[in-house]
Amino acid sequence: MSALPLAADLGIETATDLKQQLAARLEQAEPLLLDAGSVQRVHTASLQVLCTFVRERSGAGRDTGFSATSASFLDAVRLLGLGQSLGLANDNNNTHPMENPA
Image 1 (cartoon, helix red, strand yellow):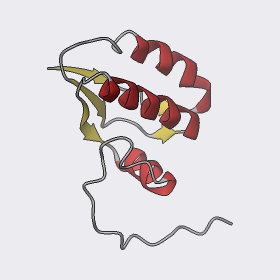
Image 2 (image 1 turned 45 degrees about the vertical axis):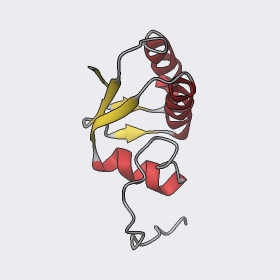
Image 3 (image 1 turned 180 degrees about the vertical axis):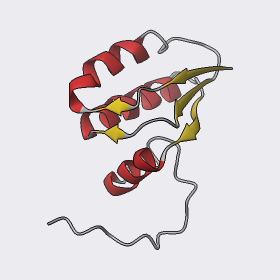
């Protein structure tokens, strides 16, 4: 099993770099853990890249998971409803208050 640390800044301007970084691991046969523990800023575009990466690996029978997740990362995943897509849907407690979108 190998681990891949994600950058602290996963803003929209880094989505292309993230895609290239992950593409190198797409065909990796061994299970891969993504370390999102230091992510402080995340944009929907980067989460889309991650969802596609996890889905493609899963479709090829390759395991992908997360070894760590920051609060910022988890908040973005929760707000966008991507927990199941990323394999992070183990929080069955949906009592988090919805943030004011205004």
